[in-house]
Image (cartoon, rainbow, N blue to C red; front, side, top):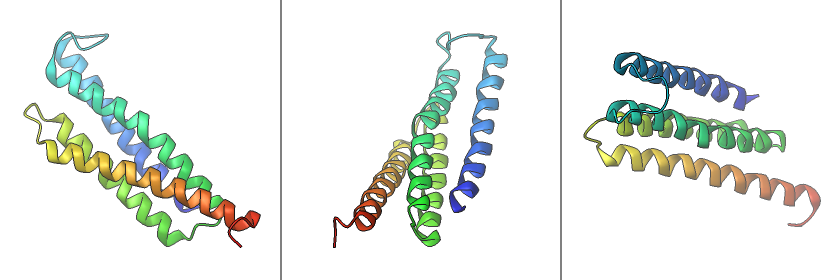
Length: 132
């Protein structure tokens, strides 16, 4: 299961992002919300954006793998997703945000979702005889 490798890597990144939010909450003594603290708000958004995109990307990768997508393509998708999420997290975490990192991260993440979705559709069509 190639997808399991990337699920594990991304789970570790999820925990790191979680601890960054916790650290900022402790630093600013904020239990809920951001209380207007810009860096806490950024840490919250990095974590939230990760939770919005990564599970769906991993689900599509798993379904594509289960449907027969070759490990090479799954590694390409997985590496792109990890790089995309790291780039996004770095960019959004900065108080003076270098937008290029955020944009690059989102483009990579969305391309992974699109490519995995396309793979699922094509593999289904091939197995069901739609493309014969």
